[in-house]
Length: 65
Image (cartoon, rainbow, N blue to C red):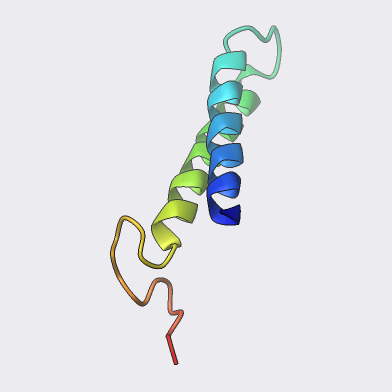
Protein backbone atom coordinates (compact mmCIF):
# COMPACT_ATOMS: atom_id res chain seq x y z
CA UNK A 1 0.00 0.00 0.00
CA UNK A 2 2.85 2.38 0.82
CA UNK A 3 4.42 1.65 -2.56
CA UNK A 4 1.22 2.64 -4.33
CA UNK A 5 1.00 5.89 -2.35
CA UNK A 6 4.62 6.75 -3.20
CA UNK A 7 3.96 6.01 -6.87
CA UNK A 8 0.77 8.08 -6.88
CA UNK A 9 2.41 11.09 -5.23
CA UNK A 10 5.37 11.01 -7.64
CA UNK A 11 3.21 10.49 -10.71
CA UNK A 12 0.53 13.06 -9.92
CA UNK A 13 3.13 15.56 -8.72
CA UNK A 14 5.00 15.15 -11.99
CA UNK A 15 1.85 15.58 -14.03
CA UNK A 16 0.95 18.69 -12.06
CA UNK A 17 4.39 20.18 -12.69
CA UNK A 18 4.15 19.40 -16.39
CA UNK A 19 0.83 21.25 -16.56
CA UNK A 20 1.91 24.12 -14.31
CA UNK A 21 4.97 24.78 -16.45
CA UNK A 22 2.74 26.16 -19.20
CA UNK A 23 1.36 28.87 -16.91
CA UNK A 24 4.61 29.99 -15.29
CA UNK A 25 6.09 33.27 -16.50
CA UNK A 26 9.55 32.19 -15.39
CA UNK A 27 11.27 28.87 -14.60
CA UNK A 28 9.22 26.97 -17.18
CA UNK A 29 12.14 24.78 -18.15
CA UNK A 30 12.94 23.86 -14.57
CA UNK A 31 9.32 22.98 -13.76
CA UNK A 32 8.92 20.95 -16.96
CA UNK A 33 12.17 19.06 -16.37
CA UNK A 34 11.23 18.37 -12.75
CA UNK A 35 7.88 17.03 -13.93
CA UNK A 36 9.55 14.67 -16.37
CA UNK A 37 11.94 13.49 -13.65
CA UNK A 38 9.09 12.85 -11.18
CA UNK A 39 7.07 10.87 -13.73
CA UNK A 40 10.19 8.85 -14.61
CA UNK A 41 10.86 8.14 -10.94
CA UNK A 42 7.26 7.02 -10.49
CA UNK A 43 7.60 4.56 -13.38
CA UNK A 44 10.93 3.30 -12.02
CA UNK A 45 9.37 2.84 -8.57
CA UNK A 46 6.60 0.66 -10.02
CA UNK A 47 8.94 -1.41 -12.16
CA UNK A 48 11.31 -2.21 -9.29
CA UNK A 49 8.61 -3.66 -7.05
CA UNK A 50 8.72 -7.42 -6.71
CA UNK A 51 5.83 -9.12 -8.48
CA UNK A 52 4.73 -5.99 -10.33
CA UNK A 53 4.64 -5.34 -14.07
CA UNK A 54 7.95 -7.14 -14.67
CA UNK A 55 6.83 -10.30 -12.80
CA UNK A 56 10.42 -10.96 -11.80
CA UNK A 57 11.55 -12.26 -8.44
CA UNK A 58 14.91 -10.48 -8.47
CA UNK A 59 14.53 -6.77 -9.22
CA UNK A 60 17.65 -4.61 -8.96
CA UNK A 61 19.68 -7.28 -7.17
CA UNK A 62 17.27 -7.91 -4.29
CA UNK A 63 17.74 -11.62 -3.83
CA UNK A 64 15.26 -13.68 -1.85
CA UNK A 65 16.79 -15.89 0.80
